[in-house]
Amino acid sequence: QPYGQAFPQSDVQQSATQQLEALRQSLGGMPGGLGGRAASPASPAPPADGCTSNPLFAKLHSTLQKLALLEQDPVEASFQIHEAWEENPAIFDECPAGVVTALVYLSIAQDRDWKYRLLHRATYMLYSTPGLQMRMASGRWPMSDRLIRTMYHNSEVMNKLPLKLAEVEVHGSTAASQQLGVINSDEAMELSMRHKDTVAVHFKTVLFYHFYHQERSPCACRTRSWCLPFWTRFLTNSSVDVWLAARDEQKTLFRMDRSGCLRNTGHSLSSNFFAEPIDLMFVFEINAFMHPIARVMPAKRVLLYPTYDLSDDQISNFEDLGVSVLPDDAILKPPNPAFRKILEEAVAMRQARLQRPKDRLLLLPADIRPIKGQLDFLAGLVFEGARRPSAVQRLRGLTLVVAGGCDGNQTYCAEVVAMTQKINAEKLLNVVVADQLKDDELAQLFTASLGVVLHPVIDCNPRVV
Image (cartoon, rainbow, N blue to C red; front, side):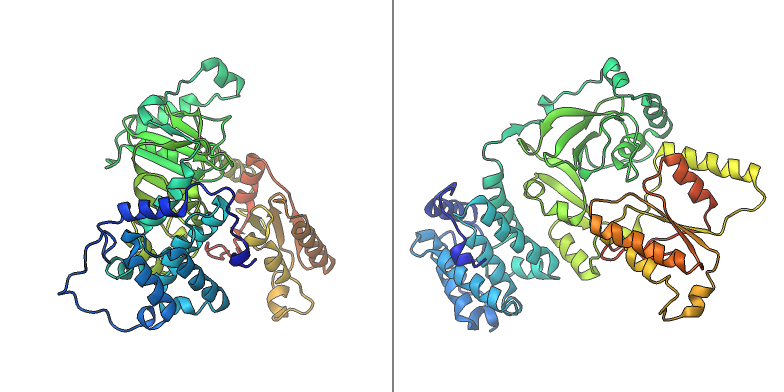
């Protein structure tokens, strides 16, 4: 939809004049004369580039030089750049900082939906373009990630209540815990006592944002994802204040009590905002990092597990912006304590009962959805029309178990089932769609299989057997 027709003004939170004045005040000390200070005469002239030779960028930069006097409106110049960029994305390569600046100033005085779309684009460009942060920091454009976050903040805190850490108390109720079926507080206490003060950390407060958590098990990690919030407590001590923002739409806030149990605080980031800084925020998934709620979090340092393939240059650019990236394929996700015990028991039972160490079996453990790549992997097992028929022939008699439930995309799930039927009809391999399995059933398959297959399509986890 053309932006010229898509900026309704009815719900604007502040007038353009007010926001421009706020920008002038907040950026008075930045390079470029926004605070009314002339640029140093000793400063060398910037080299000729698209930012100076393209009249669109020259006009916006001139307008921003006079922003302190409110003589010209930068929104019009910003709109012209945005319109030109939509028609020809290559204009970004001429002057990346100018395009980012235009998007941010165009977001002024728009309704929240369009404002957030523009700020999202600006954030994406700033973080994904290698070296852009360093060029902007030393360049002539009055733009920074701090300003983008300020623009988000102005909208995010409206109609929300401030949250101070000392005012949020959590208490565990034995009766309530039993009602939730929680019988694992002993596990948390035992692990805390065994590993207490193993690691010395430099932070006192940490928020795990967009992490999996099962509220029915507040005292023991039972997800099939990371148990990092619990491990943080086990390896340190109760002086480290552990918070978790869940993956639900409201971003429900949990806080760990002294016994190592994550308790629902009764607050959420959809209705509250942190009124004081936290030392560290650990974000799970790069899309979650782009949430407006996450962008305004007052964290002194951010760790990002992206679940996305970032180049080394992009990772360096993130670091320049104060975000440390933990590459997906550099970090293991061990099973939670309960599942580890189940796996060990399954191995012992198999060794005691059977002579052969493994079955002729491969396991594909993942929810059935396009990004996990089940359909593509199965297509490679079809003998008819195969690029290397001999390779498929060599797998004769192998059983492949697709262990995962349908994750909502019914069309994709039906295509996976149809492909398994096609493979089974050739009578070379046997493919079984096992749906979602219980932990003990999955452990038996792990124990019996020759190997585990991972075949993601757009995820950055490696394709392996």
